[in-house]
Image 1 (cartoon, rainbow over the protein chains, first blue to last red):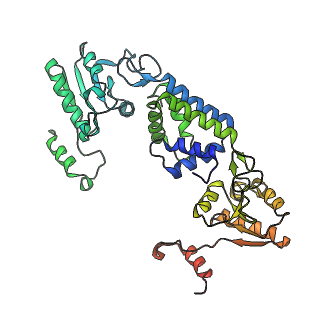
Image 2 (cartoon, rainbow over the protein chains, first blue to last red; image 1 turned 60 degrees about the horizontal axis):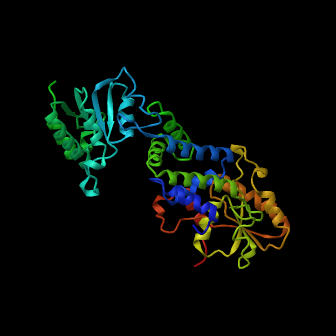
Image 3 (cartoon, rainbow over the protein chains, first blue to last red; image 1 turned 30 degrees about the vertical axis):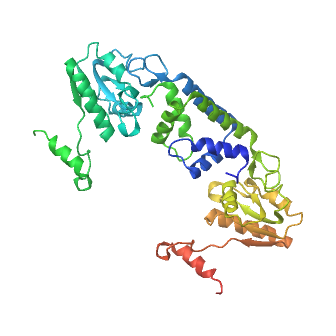
Length: 198
Length: 198
């Protein structure tokens, strides 16, 4: 960073803290910012602080929101007896984009990972169990199809089973448009095991 | 953006304004920022505003700096009679990283591009010509090897030639480690034309 003056170095350093942004990327962003109108930079900075200050967990589903209860949890048209469990708010947005799911969500903010020292108490599981004390018909586990996601799905299903509530897991298999030739064996086996009648 | 609450949508929108950051990238950065400690976000925001406020053009070479004269222009050990002309501060940093160049720089902040409507008056050329009124031995033109960079180099050399100051252009050819098989014909021709005696 010694090639740039202190203020520019600081800016590059801050931008490099963001995920997926390396030294070159941070330099490019920094010089873009230095060439932006000062008011635009001020507005961007204010948006950062305002979002971080006003966004918190929805008191029902734990997603990130700026209201006490998120728009989905406070929508009476949604089916509040069907809860889809996801790892984070982005996964929730991905399912929302399908436009077909009418139930509500529960955001765990992570997945159980013994390797990374993340246990059941480090994700929003207690909040989920608390919700199940109310009227719930089904819990759909939509954690990722990774080792951590599967571990979490298994753990949650064992936890819920005794309550008698239906627990389901989203299907794993060949993605739509996927070319079987290029798909890994584990996925192919899953697709085989999960085959349905035509 | 309707899948996120307003504050999150605003944050994603602001981040999307940055170069090379699309919708998915902005979402990832936004959720990272929302999970950062609030003080860190505040510090990041302050760094943005502070850099934009305090960084301006060096009064000698026009590079971006937070002091009146940049560290290179105010360094008496550098050869102030040798000026390397570059398109932007990042190109200057790239040459500084070689650690071998002992002269000073002049940053144009762009290149002449009739296609984009950027003419000689839109880049810092007047400032360069003013510098040449002092004692200068050589002007090295290190603009990019693109159409715009070459046009700019040609324009500057014609402007300077009458003053009698030596004007040179950095070499164009096969990059070190480059595989001739994969290099475009124009570069190969340039390398041929620029061949030197062994």
